[in-house]
Length: 290
Image (cartoon, rainbow, N blue to C red; front, side):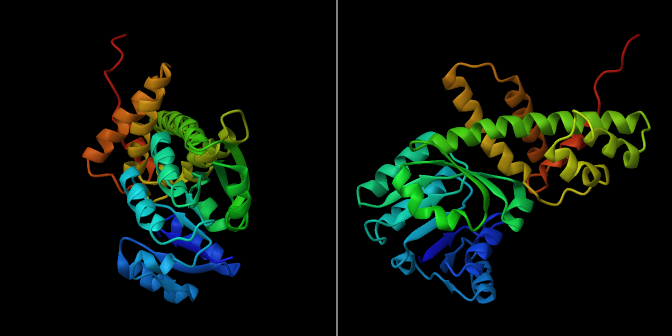
C-alpha cells in the first residue's frame, strides 16, 4: 500500500511520521512548502510538487484546517487518483462538507472516509488517537492499515458524515470540560490552594479528566503552547453551534464556549492552546454585594 498525506501541522506531521515508520508513506504535501520539504527529507519520502504526485497512491489522508480546504484538496485529488483508491479526511468539518467530498470522489470511482480524530497532539505523537469514521465498510476496510498506524481505537460510526457528527459531539464535551476546568482552577488560585496538592487530589476523584491531567499544571504556569489552538476550537464551535440549532437542542455550553474563545481570538490568543481560557476566568465578574 502506498499512502499520501496532506496537511503537516501539529497533528498531521506526527501522523505522517507513523505512516513512514510502517513503510506506508510515499508522498506528502503542505500549504507551507518548506515544511513539506523538510519533513520529506527527514522521513525519506517525496514532497509533492503538484497533486499529480499523488496519482500512484492507494490512500491519501487529509488533515487541513477548513471546510474550503477539504473541498479544494478533494477536487484536485479527484482529477488524479485512480478508481478504487480512497481519500481519508481527518479534518474537523461539517457533515455537509463530508457528503459533498464523498460525492465529488464517487463520481470518479474513488472512495471517501470522513475520519476526524480525538486525542490531541499527545495522541498523534504517541499513535494513540481515537478515530471516528463515517463511510462504507468496504472503504474503511481498505484504509484500516493506514489508520492503525496512528490510532488506538477505530470506530465505524455509520455512513458518510457520521464521523463528523461524532466529532461534533466530542467537541461539545471538550468545550464544556475546558470551561469547567479553567473556571475551577481559577477559583482554586483565588482561594490560595496549593496546585501541587490540588491537581492530584482532583484527578483522584470524580473531577478527573484528560484536560485536567494534560493541561492543569501548565495552564496554572501560564504555559499555553499548543496543543490545540484556540482559533481551531473556535472554528469547530461555529460548526457545532450550527448543527445544534439545526437539531433543535439547547446548547448553552457551546454558546458560552464560543463567546469565550471568540474573545480570546480577538485578544490575539488564536495560536495559544485552548487552556488559555483561564485568562478569561481569572478576570472575574461583579463582586458579591453581600
